[in-house]
Image 1 (cartoon, rainbow, N blue to C red):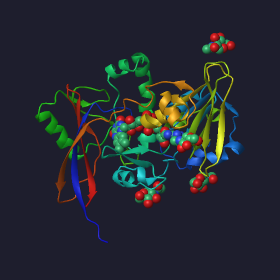
Image 2 (image 1 turned 60 degrees about the vertical axis):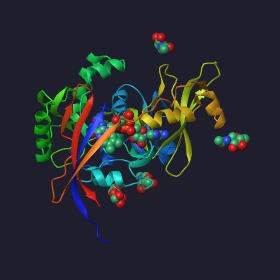
Image 3 (image 1 turned 135 degrees about the vertical axis):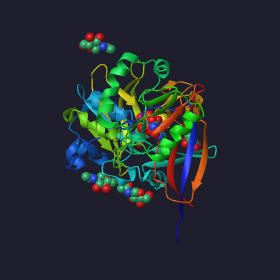
Image 4 (image 1 turned 60 degrees about the horizontal axis):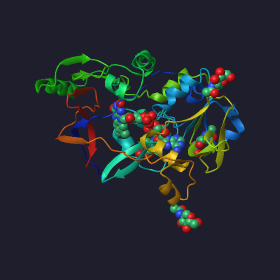
Length: 361
Ligand SMILES: Cc1cc2nc3c(=O)[nH]c(=O)nc-3n(C[C@H](O)[C@H](O)[C@H](O)COP(=O)(O)OP(=O)(O)OC[C@H]3O[C@@H](n4cnc5c(N)ncnc54)[C@H](O)[C@@H]3O)c2cc1C
Ligand SMILES: *[C@@H]1O[C@H](CO)[C@@H](O)[C@H](O)[C@H]1NC(C)=O
Ligand SMILES: *[C@@H]1O[C@H](CO)[C@@H](O)[C@H](O)[C@H]1NC(C)=O
Ligand SMILES: *[C@@H]1O[C@H](CO)[C@@H](O)[C@H](O)[C@H]1NC(C)=O
Ligand SMILES: *[C@@H]1O[C@H](CO)[C@@H](O)[C@H](O)[C@H]1NC(C)=O
């Protein structure tokens, strides 16, 4: 069957979208040599070098990978990630952005879901969203740091760690340059030039794509890990956090997960008195795992035959997507594909960005 493609320019107007994305490095080694601590989940019992972990991180995504790399410097760390690895996968390149998102097969890095008729995807790959997203990099606003209760001084000290490893300035694409002029012309000012900072006006931000369009996501931050202290299991789907309830106050002691063959395993926390299970399974995955583990509204858990560990009516509630309006401009000739390089940020909290992509019709 013949397929037709046309080029389209998509201009997006986001209201209060989120921020973090990360990403570098060229090597002739295979990924198995470069990341010797990453193994299939089924090998857990036979090859895991550590028996008890100070931290078990559930979800090796945008947040989980840098967290594992830094914690492994001083502690024994396990990462459970349900997807495979992004290394060497050509589908994660800039050129294949749309093809990757359209792949909805059972093990695709992009898990399709539909809410109120709106199509969206959840990442299912090491590096999480940073392995499939549009690769635009920005630091958060000071206000959002304060709202999250984070120490701005510490945050500012941390950014270069990420930026040096995976972020770069984009080679400005003609359409992104036109969008920049247009934003300035309609008054989205000042012109902030190139900046990683979250600033009102128009700017060119960072990108995790290199000059060849190769993506460098959060999974590459694992290069900074201490390999002796880290096990990363891929194709490991966490099913339940295990609690010790003997003292009356529930304490997480381990995580039950399923490997790529459907077999169950249990990873165990050490006696270290600050040991923790850390959920970085994404906006949907983290509350889902809490609910499956018995933390949530009692009546709802009981209805699903989940034994209640802690009654909390807020878990999994108050979820809302960011409103987004798309303006689609078709072209009848080829225009170079580009993802987000230029953004406009208004004081009303509207984010404006554009992508040019092939569109199958
Ligand atoms: C198409 C698209 C384009 C985007 N473009 C941009 C952009 O250009 N710039 C930007 O800053 N942001 C962008 N974003 C948003 C950004 O990618 C996310 O905000 C960010 O990745 C969230 O990070 P996270 O660590 O919270 O979760 P994720 O990165 O989603 O990580 C969660 C991880 O947990 C794993 N997981 C979930 N459940 C389980 C389980 N039970 N067991 C084991 N593992 C599990 C998942 O497989 C995943 O790897 C985009 C998002 C999408 C979908
Ligand atoms: C890991 O699992 C995947 C998917 O089942 C398989 O293709 C791959 O060969 C496995 N790798 C090893 C080293 O067993
Ligand atoms: C890349 O995407 C194509 C199209 O969806 C798919 O057939 C192929 O298996 C994917 N390759 C990898 C390495 O994931
Ligand atoms: C953990 O143990 C250390 C040393 O044994 C002790 O000083 C500290 O107070 C303990 N912390 C907690 C949270 O129990
Ligand atoms: C809960 O258990 C009851 C009794 O065994 C059963 O009838 C019901 O279908 C179960 N509900 C769910 C959601 O599994």
